[in-house]
Image (cartoon, rainbow over the protein chains, first blue to last red):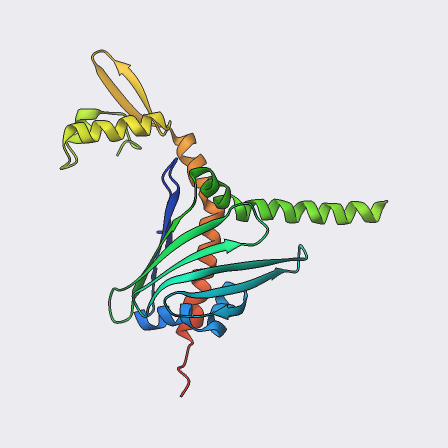
Length: 155
Length: 86
């Protein structure tokens, strides 16, 4: 089966491209990036601030109850063009990866389908690869924390 | 293409409209990344796929891809049920 979400990350480069085609009209796809209540639902995050305008800024907060951690995410919005494009920065607090630049392009395919192309640029190829490993790293950390909990009960 | 059989640079290039040197350059890069391997056979060099390395690259990205795929699936479902507020 063909994968709906594709990632193109060339070896040794400091950027990557995520593409996804949606069974949604362009306007609905863009709305999912525009309305705080909707973002909260699909990103599983709390929207603390979202200024949808050129030179606005944003701040999200994601809590993970399993590992008892809160992640603060923030950035600035460089360009906000409804149904076309969002250019923004993205940074996670308290992690050593620094800031990344994101170009989100929204495209109409047909009346009922649309496409999102997300081009992310990291500061270096090394940082990109570390971020790519992140979901996996968290998975391992979670397992470690579970293990620690179990072990501490045995003491 | 290379996945099904080992091929020479010429045979690979004949499948593309791209100039032969461009194809050679790409093959060289893929070989350097160990995604392709070369095997000398008389005067010809055959290229074949390094399946293990290919899988490594895919495995490495897969959790990240899966994370976005899950998010986007959720987005799609939410927006399909979306009714504009009047």
